[in-house]
Length: 120
Image 1 (tube, rainbow, N blue to C red):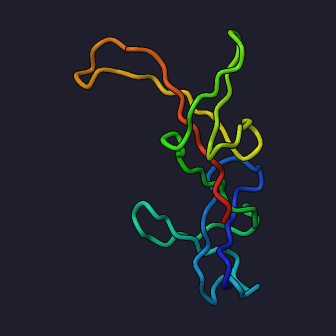
Image 2 (cartoon, rainbow, N blue to C red; image 1 turned 180 degrees about the vertical axis):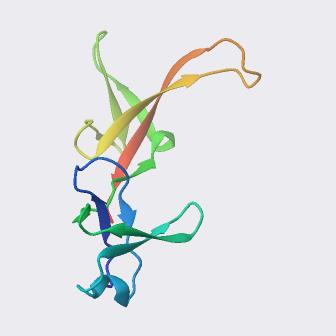
């Protein structure tokens, strides 16, 4: 198993677990998948009857610092990354976050983070 593989619950909901790269997962005799919990570095075993191979999780990179706004008319503007206007849903997404004072005071308002989908 050279390329990273992942398993997810058959419902399609929940975490995607990275499989451990060893002979345990290539054997069809084993009734479990061997996966790694990255937060704590422990190996877990998930039942093959309840978990299936899946696509890798999406990875996103913050590119907000590389973006600028391009004025349109008074009702619209466009976000530009590397001099190319971007559209959400086509490799980019906007994530809305609340802006607060460091001391936990009243919220200042909202900001948007521009993220680009990272290709593996």
